[in-house]
Length: 95
Image 1 (tube, helix red, strand yellow):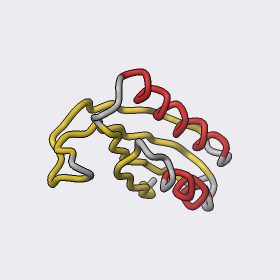
Image 2: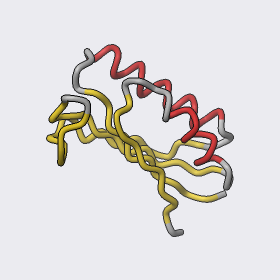
Image 3: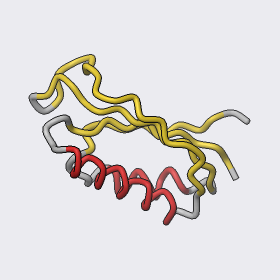
Image 4: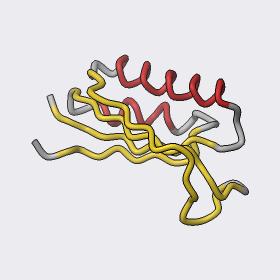
């Protein structure tokens, strides 16, 4: 099992309920990949480095998980189609 981190930026144009639902959806997708979530770090609303889809702010989350080698590919396929996720990055952490 490898350790990974997802850096996730969620749209600031949605309400708190929709944002929580989006985060729950991402966490379920991570678990369906055969991974175990270690930690979810919520950084809150922050200014984006540049404008994305007419937004200058977004909600930042960092999800740490442990899973098989193919987990990032499986998760990434689904994150690309989630409309409230404006940016994401999955990286492998060194042990």
